Length: 413
Image (cartoon, rainbow, N blue to C red; front, side, top):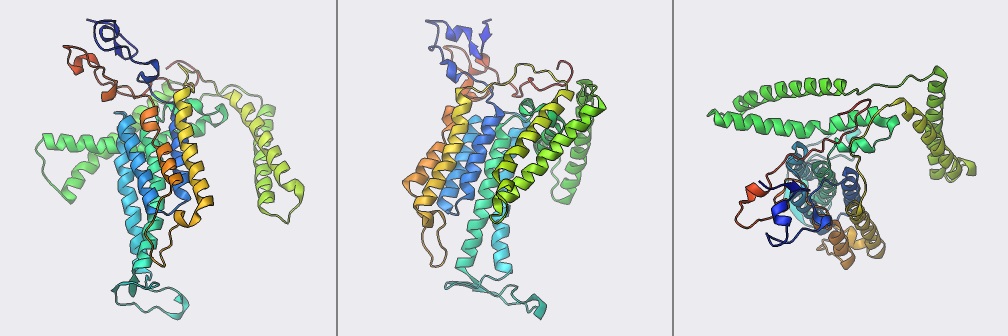
């Protein structure tokens, strides 16, 4: 048997006994979840600044390509298809709403439906009636933009490890971060439970469909969700989640006053920036003062939380490249909007064919960078180096991705 190190077989890494050694930058490892979220937020920002269907379709394709190339076999990676289906539902609903609540504003009549008369107090609202191509196309553009933003965030959920994301949460927000991570893990866990129950039903020869099959799937899924919740609660309790240090009453009062005062200052400063008729001191000075006070209060509150870190995540060059690709995609899309705004928002009246500019294509190319720049995750087919005379399965068996390095308050994992 040969020794394995860093995901590379020792026999394959030895000189003269197989392919050359892989580059250290391409060794399989899990990327920092914050980098994936910054990349996805950059893509969502780019999608929010356009209704061009060609650009939006390219962004969806880029997100799907990145998920296919860099996703793992973890439960949350299986939820990306659900976001695609939900995006299609959003587009359909937007088009249906345009048809139901009047779509006759346009020159190209698509179909004429019987109009339902409404009372006088509902003036301005029309049910059905003539449906024009322009209004249906406008609904499709709006729905596609919202669906693209949802798919981009779904890509972050499929690529980022929510458990590792807890380690980047400040101590003052650790309890809130734990609740958010548990909430984000609900949908992927339900998808995994449904797939497991359906697989078990097929193995038992169950072929029912419709409501009978739904009843046979829903009850085991709910029971499995209850079992997972109890196991999670027991695991969190045994690891000390929710344990806080003894803090004097005066320090707790000072911490609460700082946090609340800082948040009030942030709200007042934001209002001052938006209201040009207000006093000058209510704008940027109040906003900066509120931020400083709120951060000070959070740092003081973080001392109450005792937690240890096992192998903390660090930002390396790959994380910076992935996050930079998302920021570059958003910046290039905004730049394209300042140069040719009519192409980012193609008009539907008169009907025009949407076009893309070199800046838009450059934004899409930047968004697609993580599909190749990010290191391959452990357990993916690209992380299995071939060895002469050795089956692929013997070289690197797939492993479950889920870094055991999670933030643990008060104790060891």
